[in-house]
Image (cartoon, rainbow, N blue to C red; front, side, top):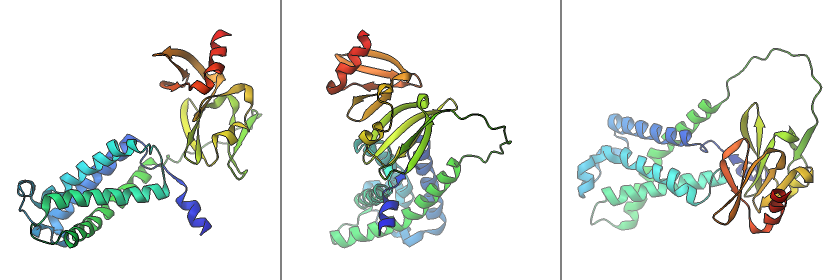
Amino acid sequence: MVSLQQQLGRPFDLLDNTNSRWLLILFCTIFSTVFILFYDPLNVSGISKETTLARLFSYHGLSFWGALVLIFTQFWLRPRFNLDTFLVWQFLLWVVLEIFLLSVCFFLIYREFGKPFLPEFIAVFRMTALLAIVPYAIACLLIAVVSMPPAVSVEPETPKPAAALLSIKDENGKPMLSIAQEDILLLKSENNYTAVFFRQEEKVEKKLIRSSLKNILQQLPPPHFLRIHRSYSINLNNLSTVDRKNGELQVKLKQLPDLPLKVSETYKEDILRLMNS
């Protein structure tokens, strides 16, 4: 049971970026269109055409409406819930929510008048789940394969003296990340995790560590890491600008110029001292 809870509490970042979400929608749309066209699963060609929209799109419009619902959930609804990165249990619930919304959409468009509401909706939900799960699962598998880093053959090198590294541990004291102090850019609180943004080979990487922001800050040298918000802490060595805009203070980091960070009132005095020094 403990192992299952740990698995359900792990981050699920497969659909974090925009390209992955579009690939999910595109694959599900194409797969469903071809599958329905050639195999007529669950006798969908026999669904009602009593409404104007149903007559306009026929049963081939199932994929069209499905794509619209996925665009709505992935690009409009998801940001409203601040789900930048899912946990596994959140992702599973989100899939159920998407299937439910798809079922509502199909039911409103292709409903048969005169039939009892609940049995008819349950039948639509069952059909939607059976049609949606397979392409959804295959799309996630495809995205996972595409996202895998290519295998690189590395020539053995002469060992060099290692720079002093900071070891960042999770809530159980297990080391999760060893990194040079100057490479850490930003710490961001995300639910029960802390996202560590760091520089690696001129790229900005992100790693989720199951621990509170406060706990991780206690592991780092205080003079170099400054908290600017309840959810953010920055590495002063990578501070680029401090700007006052519309009465609020904002800071920017050298490697994250397009990500202005708001300074909350609680921590404003610390930043003002920097500006005046």
